[in-house]
Length: 68
Image (cartoon, rainbow, N blue to C red; front, top):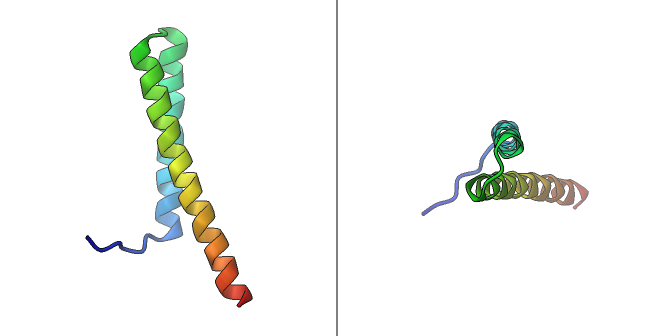
C-alpha cells in the first residue's frame, strides 16, 4: 500500500471531527457512565491524539526542511 501525502487542511479537518467525536463520547459518559462509554471515550481520545501527533510530525518535518 502506498502512503499518500495528506494535506494539512485535511489533517486539520480530521482533528476537528475527532474532537467533536470525543466531546460526544464524553457527553454520553457524563449522562450515562458505563464500560461501553469509557471504551468509546478512550477510542475517540486515541484517534484525536494520533491525529495531533501526525500534525505535529508534519509541522516539525516542514520546519526541519526549511531550516536545511
